[in-house]
Length: 283
Image 1 (tube, helix red, strand yellow):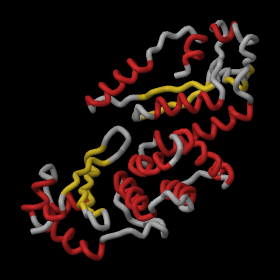
Image 2 (image 1 turned 135 degrees about the vertical axis):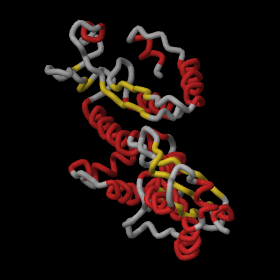
Image 3 (image 1 turned 90 degrees about the horizontal axis):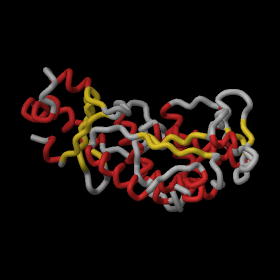
Image 4 (image 1 turned 60 degrees about the vertical axis):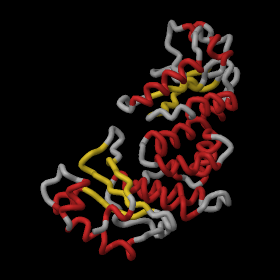
């Protein structure tokens, strides 16, 4: 979204108009949007790219693809390689290494930011967690940058973490942040876990629960056809409904019952869910 960069690559982009179109598509609720950012373009240094990242992140696409310039032979940027001091791999896909504005160290930094965006944003597994955490930082780019630095410092980039391992790493990253309300964050994380699968073995630090208070009432919900069939008419029996769904009461003071339906998922694998007043799940 850097105007100087846009002019240098002969694009004609009105970002305000583009943003409005993206929002109109998002409002329709039936199209999975991917928005791309390319690092390594002329006149875009590390800080400038961060501003472009924040601009695009604000549009909240389902996927934010952070890619790197490919200097294809015969392209305009290949012809102006010397002018922009572009150094790139001499084998396919001819990806940029450095430019007149972007030293190699910054290219590497952006590679780790890309990994964090792919792992935590594009996976769709941390939607509510990120919605809570990101605003606590100076900017979205600042959040993913800080997370990437922690990730490398802890050598996570050498490991293949499990789904719960990713939650563990994120918790370790933010647990010392004084702005984070620990209980609120745990509820958001638990919600995201439940969006993908029935919560079973949870991390030891994830201690928020209302199970003792609501266990019998949740069990009674599935035993009462007047209650579960009203919410889950597409299941033939309460056993099937119990197997394919998960009901849990979230929150401390303002409690809400959430019914997750794993038989219905979106393109990112998130279960369809319904938020209800606790009175709706009781006789």
